[in-house]
Structures are given as C-alpha cells and as structure tokens.
Image (cartoon, rainbow, N blue to C red; front, side, top):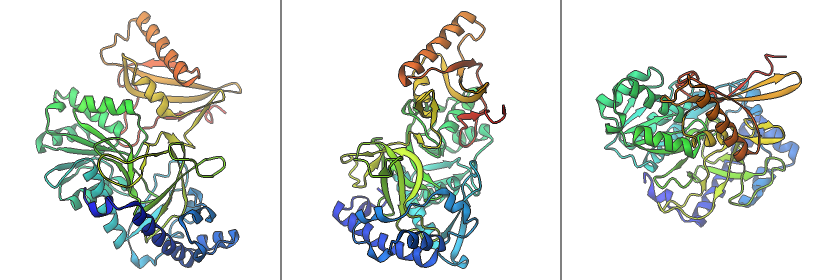
Length: 433
C-alpha cells in the first residue's frame, strides 16, 4: 500500500472524515460557485444544515450539462491565479467540460495515482511505460505523476507509434504498462507482427482504464501479454484516473473514499439501491479545490460489492463499469451494453477480440449489425465455415442477451484500431435520414 494508514482506516473514522470534508466542501461551493448557490437556493437547501451523510440526498445533482454551460471557467471554486493546470473531457458528445487543478489538487492526484499503481503491485523498483495520451486528456499526466510519486522509473511515451511502443517495452525492460485495454491488445498484435515474443519480456502487470472492458477481454489481454491486467477507474470531471482501482485480488475497484463519496442510485428514481444491486454511479469530491463536483451523475453503471477485500484495504469496492446509461442500446425492447456483446464474443473460438456495433435504419426501423473480425488462423475464403461461424456468433448473442442481431464477419484487421479509447458503437442512423 502507498498510504496504509489511510487505506486501512476504520469505517467509523472514515465516515467521520467524510462528513467533515463534505460539510466544508458544500460551504465552499455555495460561497464561490454561482451555479451551486442558485441550485441550492432553488431547492431550499442550506449547506450548514447537513448533519449526517444521509442528508446528502437533499442536495441537488450536478450533471455534465452544468459543466458545459459553465465553459470554460464558470465552475471554478478558486480564483484563476490559484489554478496551475487545466484538463478537459474529450468532447465526443458535445461541448467539452474544462476542469482546473490547484497545486494541492495536483499533489493529491499524484498520491491517488501512486495508490493506484501500488494496488497493481508496482513499487519504486518498477519501470512504468505510460501510453495514455498526454495533453488535455487526464490519463497521461495523471499516470505519469502517480508513477513518479511512487518512485518508479517513468517513461512518458504517450499514445501512437505502436511499433515504437513495442521496441521500448523490449529495450527498456518495462515491467508495468499503463494504457487503455483495447490498445494493449493492439500492442500485443503489433509485437507478434514484429516477431517479438512479448510474453518473454519483463512486463508483469498492466494498469488499464478509460473505457469499459469485459472480464473476457481481461483474459485475452493476460494471455496475449503474459501479465496481470488491473482495472482502474476515473473520469475527468471528478479527478481523472485515480478515483478507484482494483488490487491484485481483482475482486472489484477500491474507491478512494477519503477523497470521493460514492452513491449507487436507481437511474430512474434516483433513490439509493442496496449494496450488491446495480445502479448509476454518483460521485462527490471531498477534497478537490479547483472544481469540486457535488453529487455528479457519471452515467456509469456499477454496484457496490459487499464484504471486505483480502488485501486489507477498508475502502468499499465498486464492480467494474459495465456500461453507461447513455451508451445503452435498446434493441427490440431489450437493454444491451456493448460490453455485454464483447463478453459473448470473447468466448467464441475463431473470432478475434475486435468488433463494432453498427446502428442503421431500414425504412423506419432501426437496424443493428455486429461486425466481428475472424481470428488470424481462420480460413476466411471457406464459405461454409464462414456461414457456420456467423450462425454460431448470432446464436450466442441471441442466447445470452435475449436479442437477435445481424452479424457480419470481416477479415483480420478490417476493424479500425484505436490508440486511445476504442469506438465500439458506430451510429449511422442520422446519416440515412
């Protein structure tokens, strides 16, 4: 552990710390952020009236549109002279949201990412290759600062030039790889094409995040690279990476609860669900100074895993994110997440771990086509075998998800590879209007 005295804090002491920090944070945002003051006044909520953590349910939510409307600096809770860094979201679903960090925020973020690497088993003796993108995306610099804070040798490669990534892994004796899970598979694929036996390298662990991925993909990555694959979680609006992390037991992600208060709510009623039940993840930042967020609706779907972890950390654990409420596909009345399709595909021999869900229109009807690459050893020109595999894939999806989709098998490397977040859903419906 990087900070064992905090990571093993008794539950009663942790709740008392959360309450104290929450009260302070609510007063700060009310006094310094006009949007919060307006929301709380309209809701009749007085920050100083909060007496227990249960009172948080009286506090209005914050949503992504609030941050977009405040672009660029309207949500900052400190003067601009106190901001030493800005990052932003990708803006793939509209106006980007800008997040600011004070010097103290950067220090805390570094500690949280050092915890993350420690959760994965990394130490000051490791060599960490950071392949997350640097720049306005939080992944690269967040991982970089955490690796350095841990004392590890840090290689700031950023994304792209995959052949060079493989060469550095080989030449520098890298032991820890930090990137998106889909890019890890591309690295393995590229290494094989270069004649590099990546499983024989010193690489021992991967710290993967920034996109949903299935347990089956974890197995694919671990087998292809000969490593332990650890899931990490974060989002730009809350901090960046460093909000939660799996440990070596891989039994859920430890939420760093001394800095973040997590709620799991029914996305329809916005009422709390019981531990173990799925719902929407809502976060409140307890220590962030630059741009605190209170009851931020992440749209991510997860659940609290009951019980304690064998690692000794006392922070509660959340299940790996299975999808987002805004990524959910409704196919003939059935709710389906891309990660569920991935889980099915990964269990079928003959297909590669590369796929894309293409949404289209046929007249007034929506269509769904799952494009799947066949494996490199599959005889793509054998029509009978191709048809048989196609039926097998379609049948497996229908059996597991209770929905039928069109399946198109494509040749190896036909689906575009990503050096960052993989684009799993391609929506062509508007193009056909």
